[in-house]
Amino acid sequence: MGHASDSDSPSEEEEEAADEGELESRALMKNSAMKKVFGGADEINYREFLKGFQFDDTALTQKVWTSIFNENKGDTVEVEEFMQILDRYRRMSYDGRMQWCFKVYDLDDSGSIDKKEFVTVIVDTNFNSRSSKQAKGMISKLSKAYESKYKRKMDAVTAVEFKELAKTHGVQ
Image 1: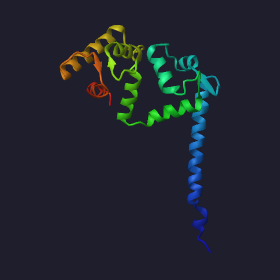
Image 2 (image 1 turned 45 degrees about the vertical axis):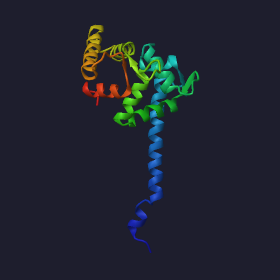
Image 3 (image 1 turned 180 degrees about the horizontal axis):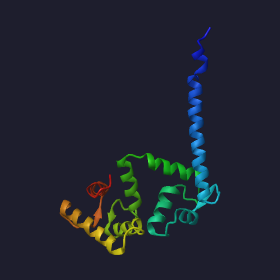
Image 4 (image 1 turned 30 degrees about the horizontal axis):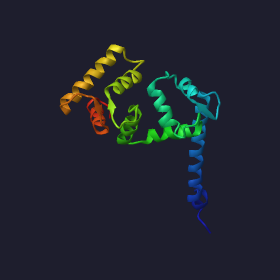
């Protein structure tokens, strides 16, 4: 005969099934919440993406949409796929996030971020919290730090340099 505690405690398989059920339930709740953002749709297009997140239509948001969220290059992306991409980003290491950001900020896919792209990124990412004057001040500060460290003008920043600049300016 088994012990009473044996029959009261769940088996390993039951625990795994419960864990999977909980994860699936959380995923459905997140998916449902995201669908509410997009009016209950199973798929979203670029305009809905802008509206759902209250983004302006800029070079940066176009790049985020086409190279990150809409990798299949269609007109729409499934909400579930969209959520998976957001979740992947959330779970990335610092280095992974820096690589992801570099890929996004390299608007022309040249393998470096030029000064014009830096200006676009700083202005777009800080539009609501910084004035144009403050954004220009940030760019000037980054340029000076870059020139001091690398002994040349900040014409094109590599991925390694980007990561170093981020570290020296409080992005960790």
